[in-house]
Length: 402
Image (cartoon, rainbow, N blue to C red; front, top):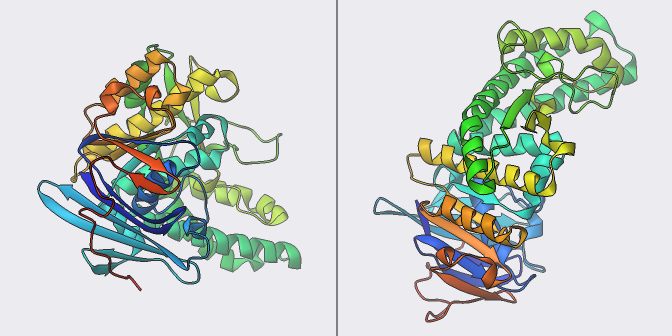
């Protein structure tokens, strides 16, 4: 699968933009602040439903505009697909597939991307929520129906937390909270599926991460991924430092996930009523990234952390290409090469050379290995400057989603 054309209207600093993309490597070059990352951000948002830069959709709409539109033409096995997404300031976003209305979250079925950006250092050094989001993004890209499971879990969690806060405020306790049992059941049912799916994904990532780390860093530092599950007593998101923190490798606790989850919910109910918040479930889980048996967070050097984060993205791309019916994901390397020395640049270029399409952004042309410069597009102040082409050549015909 590859993107053949990207069209933007009122997106970030682009009033309009038309970009032809080639198979293999595509390089966007321009000084900082010109709009390189905005181009790849639009593809990531369309394919995942989220931006790696902001949680607010309207932040991507150009100033003073009421809406922004992303249009993408895809090609796979000789078949073409047109995806369109309109971001609105004052109403719900809208989507179309081949000019037919669709739900925005359905677009992930057609376009898959894997992005590596400087912000990804927080995968290793940041909070558990960042790592959960990474895992969930890959899960949804591979199995789109899980987007609904995750959304349903979030709704149940909010309802349950509201009930717990109300009970704490009114002093209700024990058997008087029969309504809580209903939400417990839904929480355990949905949450167990999420925990199991994440655990399977972590298992599948282990070997690809090791391979990717060796290929990028040139070293074997025994990178490992260890789940930290709240249903087994781990408390990565708990502010109670006296609570036990445990790591589970899949054999530490007996019983199914559902059984362990239900037992933890029952055990923690008194404490949840005191605090007015749900203390167990996939929303409080984490995964420990380790090098040579030590947590990368706090022990790994900057270079090791960077290599681990990049390995996670490359491993995710490898899994997606193995399980996809639409070919390789589009691999995006956003301003990555400035952070790497010459050896790591060459290794990274070699690691991605066989992907069907790779998009690279860089402020300095010489930072990017020659092998990734086959199709170079220059960006200047929200303008696409593609030598030998007119900006509007082969642009998709515009048609409002409104």
